[in-house]
Image 1 (cartoon, rainbow, N blue to C red):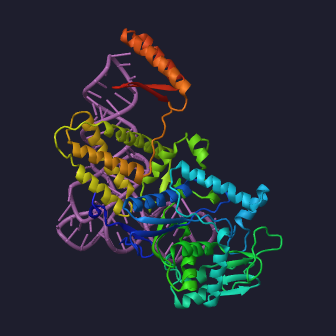
Image 2: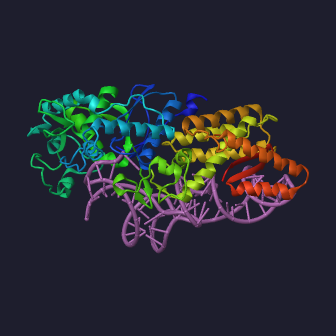
Image 3: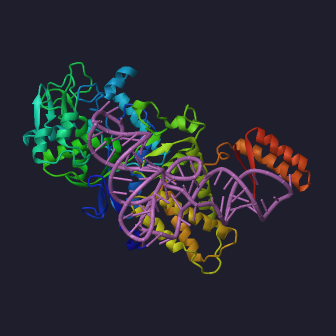
Length: 493
RNA sequence: GGUCGCGUGGCCGAGUGGCUAGGCACAGCUCUGCAAAAGCUGCUACUGCGGUUCGAAUCCGCACGCGACCUCCA
């Protein structure tokens, strides 16, 4: 496929709220930064959606031939429970509750996060930096902000002076907020005496003597503010201005707004060329969130052991379910939708196998060139995976019809289909063949095959009473037999 | 209250000023000893009311309903 057919790639820049052609500042290199998790508890499905969204972006950029440096951080300090910059550190709180060293909490939930990412076949980023591993860079950035007059120290903490910044720069551009509206809407909160304005945010916080997570700084012992790490680390690995910054919609304000302000205050230039935000996963129309208590862990999802789940769903079913919705739309979770996705995925995967067996006949193209073009067009149109999947299902119909001998296509068309399905299903969508239920227990598999043979013998003798009895008894045990052209297979009900 | 967004067929979900995605479910057919599975085919929707237009579900206005952000959250 030529480069011309692959591009151009358009993405919605949430800073300008427009679809823009993506042109990296230094092709073929692309700098991509995505806000990772705060590792103080298990990730839930909503988190998975965001990381799947940017996995799709990463995969598509790679597929287009870009050399991508993908940085996704781990927040392991500085994220406070209550914000207003007065609450307890999330990780420290969890450490207290679980009676563990904070770094044990960090390790535990970082491991868990990685397990989940693997489960959903989310590719690892190129660099996965931690906030605690970049204290020097963060302290340095605080210094630059102070030097430029946008930060002030108060009682061992350092705050970002938002009103002062807003005098000369656009604050609130990304989230569509106006500084005076923010002022009127901000409620008075106790314990904010140190801040000159309620809009100011901490870039360095003083730590109590008993605080476990603290580091020396020019302002005394403390820890960095939450927003700062992303700015410091993206600058370090991707430069003062880089191509794409992604994250969940809920991070737009204040997190990403603060990142922009910090970078401009410290280094004088806007950090990001294209901002992208993934939308939320909802449950009964409400955002899935840790604070709502309506999230499931991957274990609950796979086992179905949760009050909102009728039964378990495989990770690839969930991934496919998510990719059938555009990343910028909210996606509502429901059992019916998951079950529909499960069936659809089975049909798609069956076709991926069928395409390998197709026999050429004649030289007809079967519309495969256009099909391929439509797939690329869909993905290039702001990562429209639902449309691309719809196109693939058109291909599924073609593949099955060719397989049934109803449509004849040539060798070139078959090769094109093979290549297209492999590229789109595995590389771009990142779906995997899930091992059939029959596969993981060889003793059981052998046993069922004995019964299948017995039934086949009975059928050969036209003893249908016996063959049906075998089938029914296996069904009662949860084993479903399927008679196909190639013989009988089985799976769990 | 402020800002932003959404409302599509039984369900989930794309999309576009006219050529009416896709998946699931459902129906018919094929295959099959039967059933299941599988495959093929069919199934014309866009919250309401006005307006712009030759033509709107698609643009504009109003109404109603819903959500996100404005506090930590992907």
